[in-house]
Image 1 (cartoon, rainbow, N blue to C red):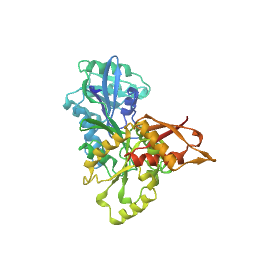
Image 2: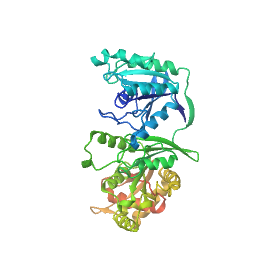
Image 3: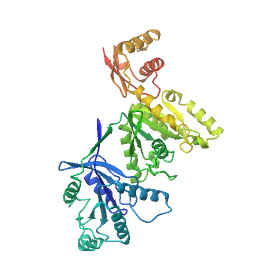
Image 4: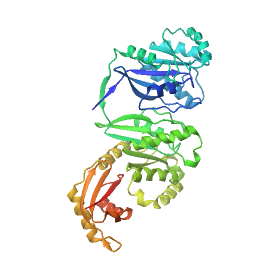
Length: 440
């Protein structure tokens, strides 16, 4: 199925003028994190908006400024906002009506004129009396198309939408590439290299990369073509222990990361190998994704360029304690900084995807489990457990329905025994198995 590329409508303006509030008002499926503090949005956020038979791609950007800064994150945020303007069909230039016109607003106005794009001046927060009293100030910016509105309460939104669809009426969507064959989510603690990994895979700086923990705040989705397959890769905010999460913003970041996990097929769990062990929170993420949500799992041990022999030994000793789960998941040692083994990640994703979506023969499965229970009979309360028939009812994850004599006695231990037999016969590295017991 082809993907449509819609005309781009980019929201820009100073920080904290209400860009994300407007985006959330217009967006259906994607929501920007919205708090009353500056600089919450950093990477551009995208969604497709439908209005009166027309569609456009709405883009929320971080606060734009002409002034370069020594703050690496703010500088990258500024550059990304400017880059979005290059391909914009319409620019929504947003100002704060309560604050009035600031010198920075005039600077941004001069910048936007250089792009030569169809630009609408949106004066936000006009529900406040002070904003209504100083609306005339914005005439100084020289925009004929002005839209006083309240993004929070919805006042004036319809007029803005009508103007947008009028401006893009002669710009039909373009059909391109297929929907993704596979959805991959990058998870991990803050500052383990998740955004660096996405950039390494894309061979471009799509995500902002910084040594400051917590740089990525919303899931960032990109598509990669590997041979003829489209792989959607999502970078997520870092996840810390629950008791370490005090800030409202970070709580929302964790929720968005978990939402991205549930929508994925494969999880790339990025671990800082230089720490010499897998943290409790990383183990919990592994079990949560692999055992509870049946997502395929690849663990990437990053920062190999700074790992000493001591860390290697301690990591090896530490992982031995969790061999029962580690032997089921796929893993790879990498360095995003030097590029070590980065070229092996996409082939590994493809292998795991094929395992995750394979259809196993029902007759083979039935014979395998029957033979296993003959060689090693299982009893509960003196009763012999038997499997009469096995059917694979789903792929991605592989889901097996067992027709058995006593389904109430088939639990984790029994399924674990049958799973070990299954993994001996088939290559299921990185792939979870979902068992369901039904009465024969």
